[in-house]
Length: 387
Image (cartoon, rainbow, N blue to C red; front, side, top):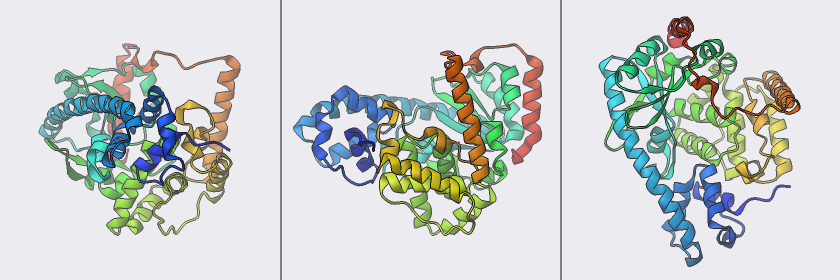
């Protein structure tokens, strides 16, 4: 059984979970290690707020000082992002391109208890796929640097995301669909049209931007948390806060309907199961379908062997998070099991062949394939808002 890391126990409490069994254990963790674990879970700011709201014991002063330093860097990056976002919004609105900001600052402002609790590293924007080619050209004209330039690989993969660096340095992931990988996208029925039609404004302080409606945001948070592996506390906190907001608004039935229509119901249920196990409680929608019962049982059994919050207890520090199992979740038990088998086979083959992930992202290697570029952008445009 996995023993919960003291920093993880403190992070769980910082995002509304149960208090640590041994509150004094945090002070016994070396400061550098504590910061490393907090940053691995992307919850340094949440931990800082949690520690300082109730007064800080003197033996935690070094950790608080280190977290404040990290928090200052996050604030500077956030202000830079807002400046880039204001310019980007003007560009998109001026061209009448439907768009939304997802995750990151939009999630923090929409449903977290305090916007300064949620750290983020980049900006995610979803645009109308029919206008994606126009947006790529608009960004180039506005001085953004495109990082993904291997058009042959991009075309073969039919990725729903390209990465740019905006003029002030913000990393932008530009999406034409919330699901990046084509094989995963085909497992769901999640058209972009509805997401953009239901968008709502959110104030980020100095700028107001469109974001997903609360139900769509909850579905997106669950999808992102699960398909990413479900091991990072930030993702589980996103799911917890987003679905709690939906529950407070009396919209859980709507969440069930949209999830089932998009074949995301198994994903959402796996996400809420893990939120309940790690954070202690989660909304309980009244599901009308029973897809994925065996798969959910397998994930629960895996987590049970780890014990309590063991699914995220060691985070990046060791194996055993069930990342491959959770990340294989699709629209049914059969589809999830097939995905797990394919992923395990690929992992075993790479281990046998001693193939490690390359340090350089192959997508960033320009190939000059203009024909592949045009074919890719044309294919995206043909997808239209059904994406």
